[in-house]
Image 1 (cartoon, protein in one colour):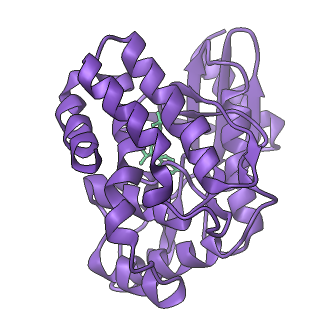
Image 2: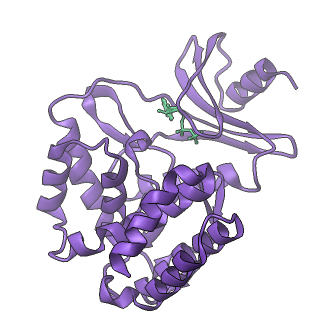
Length: 288
Ligand code: ADP
């Protein structure tokens, strides 16, 4: 099927029969093709992929809708999802706008409000994806167990299989897994988390309203999310100030921040290779 036919069929299925005026590729994504579709009626964003892993777009749609249902922070509305044997896509609202002096503050406050929404346990009922990596999930009563079993262990094992880890680091990782209690709280709130919140996963819409995109949701310690926002930057000072006013970080946050960033660095090591090995080893040495 030609791309143009896919676009047109998608638009028709949501009741937009007006002329498709133009299609522009959008850059910046890691794994999917992305397009701006402009019809006589409206602009749309389409994320498209040939041979996408099973339920890839379904999971993204569920994530976006779970966030939307909290009524705390904006996400693009998903108009249509298609997944078949050949390709998959999400057709959604096109988000575009300029930041105002309130954007960072709104992002912080609204994210904190989202983090006040809690789930039935720690983790998630379905496996999700982070980038292209399958992120195994389950619900746990205890955040430390979830963080160990579902987050760190699978990534450490993968890194080991990929031959990234020396025996010394592997041994230190094992000791770290046994000692997580020293830095991580077992009884934090099971907050709804975006799960992949780096600077490229929020956008500014009309009137400077911040939107979250591309989630990989879970329920967990809110400091896990904030630690990732600090890893690669992209979040203004006002974001942290406003966040802290609604959902203050604990006094111990500084001690566990690197341990939370470690998960994301392992994911990056497994996805993109040894550029991230130095950071991973530095953190492991710092704790053990
Ligand atoms: P990937 O899943 O491949 O990483 P992203 O979700 O990051 O793709 O999106 C790819 C690009 O499209 C990014 O530059 C992002 O800023 C932009 N983008 C994503 N969603 C929208 C949207 N709803 N409206 C406008 N641009 C978007």
